Image (cartoon, rainbow, N blue to C red; front, side, top):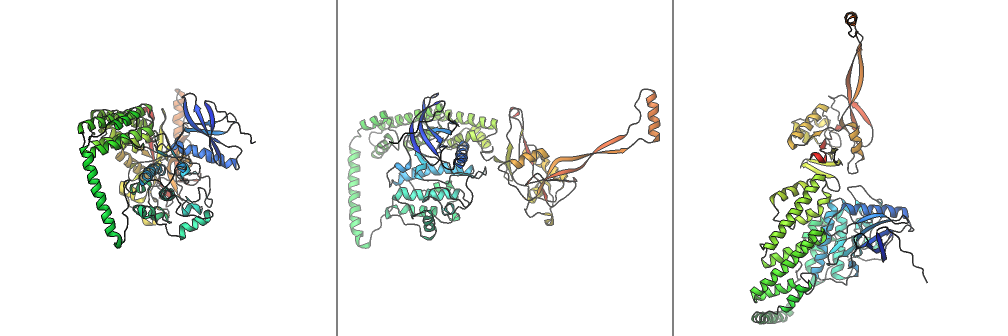
Length: 635
């Protein structure tokens, strides 16, 4: 009999049982004692093979998930170590399991609902520079409301943070779902994830993978050499979507997750069945019979009063809206079609609206962003379907949500950090009637640095945050790339000779004084303080993970100071000094002056520096400007 391994001990948690095991970690069901809530604890298996690499991947996964805040991404509650020293992190417990456990094929509407959620999550991840690289049914989980959430970023790649555990030429991911470029170990971007979503869509619709083989190599060859499979006739309205999603070349696929989500077939789309000319009359007769039966049924339903008891029972049980079946929303839509007893129907429509509004209120008070996002979307659907957009309850609730969003946006602006407001930004899309002040705050938050640290003052000035401002300490950002000749010419009306341009295309042949003029001009046009970085600040810039090296140097505002002795006093000066000394004055002194012998030009790709005069126009020296950010207390 195999002896069961003892459960780990984690302070603050009561571990109950094993939920699942992976290649590098074990997931346990636990209770967080301080809050009495069920959580899933993912604990790194210290005895697994390649434990060092597993630890790096585990830490990377936790860091990446912490950067991402989205209603359809499984978040992190806590991170730490067990009593034995093993790494762990706590995440929400999702009792409905993963997508692999669900019977397939799924209906078209169910597939659309799942793909919309996953593509929304991927859009957020890709915008923050994160490529998941392991989209598959096991990594799509469901919460208690049946909403899909993306999990397991263990092999994700952060382009923004330059974090990659594997190297080019080494394959990670799950065979059958990987893109051709990922299967060959090549560099990948977000379009690789979108290929995997295409595979997932095909499988959910047909119960089979589009390409199969004895191993990953055979599958990769099939992806390139074999044509994209044809869907059954009943699913032909999906074919164009599948063809583009499974294109072997990334450039032929959907370019973004948003584009792919918008291209999803309508949830209620039905394929038109094909028929041969010989069977046309038979099909026509069947269709005519269906129409006659439908008309008779409609007349019967119109004439017969609606039985409100089942709908009342659904409202009482809380079976309000999809995915529960049957639900009050669908039943009321049927009642609306029959136009039976409109007054009685309106009463129940308002009851449904109020019940969903109650759910929004609960989620709002708990700051449960996932539940808030989903319940508000459902509330909007009900209000639009029954013409209740102007109900007093909805208007009052939207006012509360507006105030909450304004507070979240103001807090993000105070911290000069967009990341805490990502969930609020996503929710604001569901409230098109925001107050003018809240819309203005949202626009300012969108201009803050995200997880990758990039933001902009103007369309021409892309910035990278280097040091975030603190309570009593200023921060700063720098232009993400050396300024181009066009930017300098536009601001200072300078003409840059083509013979002075470096191979990188960056601005060159500009003196230190002209660089300072450019900083002054941008400060005036943007209202922010721009200047050249000092030598010390440039050292911080070089260590920033998101900064791109280039084969040239940049001006700094740090000069090389030399002390120069001009001369000793001459005879006349010495005589005058002796006379002054008789009356208590100072005798003549040797005089010195301090002059700047030159300014440091610092290399992009290392600590090397050289000294140039302020008037020098060197073809290999560019301009990177620094923007100062006031301390938080001064904002």
